[in-house]
Amino acid sequence: MNSAMTLYFLSGIVGVLAIAVGVLTFALARMRRRVDALAGFSPIPVQSEGGAEGMEHNLVGRMTRLEEWAGDANGRLETLHGVAEASIQKVGFRRFNPFEDTGGDNSFVLALLDRQHNGVLISSLYNRDSVRIYGKRVERGRTPYPLIDEERAVLKETIGE
Image (cartoon, rainbow, N blue to C red; front, side, top):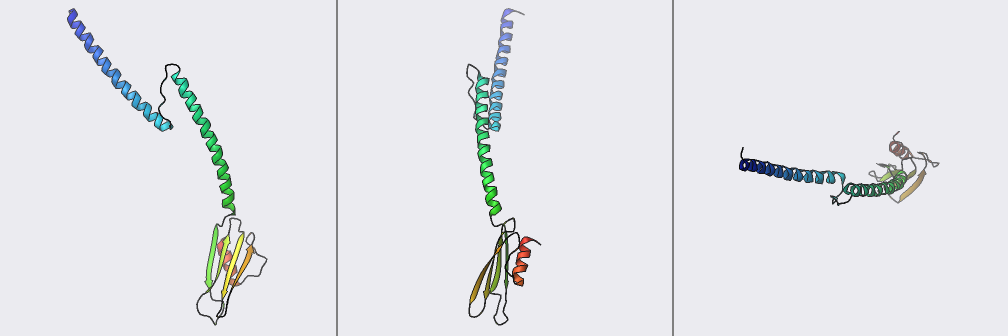
């Protein structure tokens, strides 16, 4: 081969290698953006001194903030758990007619209980002349007050017995 042909041949190889390097650089940058997106951080500019160290420092900072956030979240979760335990979680309701001389089921019993079956029974007894409302404390599914049949039934249904 003569020197001109060798020069063309080498120039072609250098051109192909330059294109390959460009394509690989583009693919690497695209892959880095995807990894950064998956890891949840923006691309880190590579510095001339210690690009890997900069990335490590950034990741350590992010992990520290994530641990702080998780600790805060655990505290909030414990608070919400306490509120949920004391909140009304079980509701029972029944309408009924306690007196033969009134029409319709205008009286009712309402049970409002938390997870441990603590709460209140609210009863409304309707007759032609008046409406009476009674509240009875419930502790662990029991009450020290006498119950009418409808109250007893609603309390049992609400507790799930």
